[in-house]
Amino acid sequence: MKVGNVVKLKLLSKRGRPRRCQAGVVTDFIDRKCWRTEKYGKKVDWSKIDPEKHAVVLFESGVMRIPVIDLEVIR
Image (cartoon, rainbow, N blue to C red; front, side, top):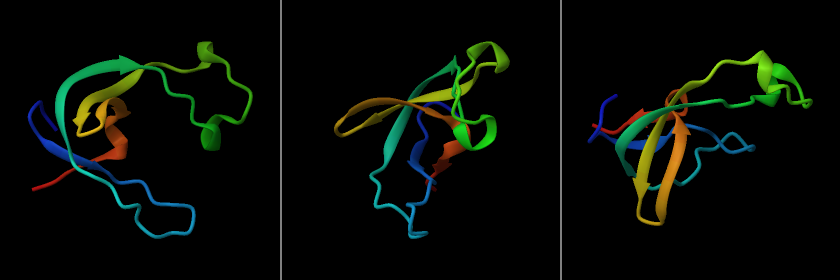
């Protein structure tokens, strides 16, 4: 994945069906911490995790910072 790629979220809804999602354009990359409750539990302790790579994605509705592992490049 690189700046300029068109991407979409690859997450599924709770019912197992793909979420209807618009495409966005990657404008930058940053490192941020992301607490994943399914992996670490509900009690947040930021000292236990390291930052992970996030993409800054421009959507029609605005800009979002999303973990790269949750994005899929659209060909």
